[in-house]
Length: 122
Image 1 (cartoon, rainbow, N blue to C red):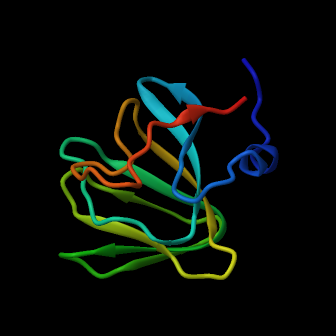
Image 2 (tube, helix red, strand yellow):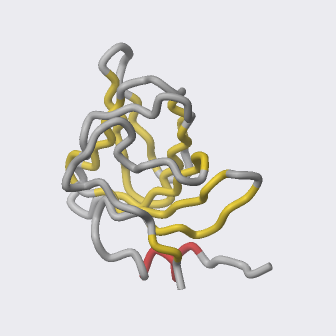
Image 3 (tube, rainbow, N blue to C red):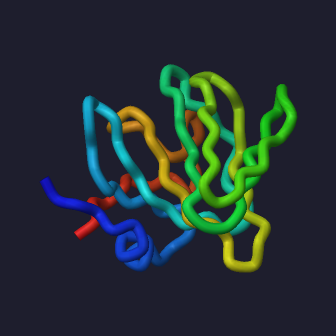
């Protein structure tokens, strides 16, 4: 049982869109990522995904629904099967915390240069 200081943890996340595994509970992964610019359009067939903005601003674009813009301290749950694309337009990007089933690919149903297996935070 080790505590995680979010600021220290985000300091260890250098590359945008390269998630780091901060913890796991009940089959869920807690991931941290820096967002900068546009991610890829994707969906997760059977997995809901929670996006919590810790710092900055993140827009989640949807093909079939209005976009959702999140400020620091706000979150949205994207249901499984829903096409979405995270976008961080701000100059400094955004720091985001994600909850999703362990083993879920960050790019869902899409193979891309942004597909990454999350490394565990030290």
